[in-house]
Length: 279
Ligand code: SAM
Image 1 (tube, protein in one colour):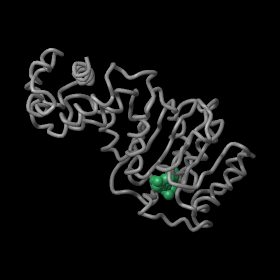
Image 2 (cartoon, rainbow, N blue to C red; image 1 turned 135 degrees about the horizontal axis):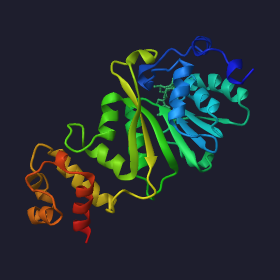
Image 3 (cartoon, rainbow, N blue to C red; image 1 turned 90 degrees about the vertical axis):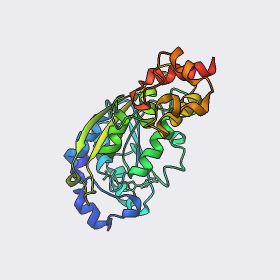
């Protein structure tokens, strides 16, 4: 009998440990182990990797990551009610699951991990976006992670992978695509979760690039992108006027049309403009 067969079904785990879903913790659980195994497979080859899982809850995705062969899983969970359920999984996979009780926003995972590291999570959406931005903006690049496989609201997932010319293209797309390859790996209807959320979800897979896609100073790029998209309906020459009095010439010098709007400018264009400020 394999380790996973010795563990009870997740509905039983939830009943035994009285894990009624708490809205305040964004708890929408995945109870279908075929589905969690499928999500775990999207995280890539786990055999020689440590995996950081944020918000394991009752452990459906945790089991998937372990059955997919993760060398070790570090599971960071804020809800103390979930810890006994996770301990049962740790007992079935000796030495391969480390549980940390606490807030993922406050914990330094690298204290417990060995490279290479992949990250996988089905997280509350607000925490997910905050962590994604942190993981994409570390003090040094490349980051501690090789890939991120994260569940988001479908709308947020679309913002991460958006291309120029679309309504969803903005700061998140630029931040993510400047430093990573991004793709939507899976779509999930509300009914895949217990309880079902109001909207559809999607798993986004990001692979860290060895260095940013185009050279640019991160702070300058962020300043330009923020100004451009804060007034996304305005032409670039108006939206960016506050950054430099000669903005129109500057835009033209890097091949951008001053009458275009931010959502028409490819990542490469924003990076070229950022370099013109730093040269
Ligand atoms: N991964 C489980 C699954 O797929 O069934 C649970 C997913 S549920 C959407 C989100 C999980 O994140 C919950 O278990 C919740 O308690 C946990 N959580 C919420 N905020 C957290 C935080 N700041 N740090 C760590 N875990 C958090």
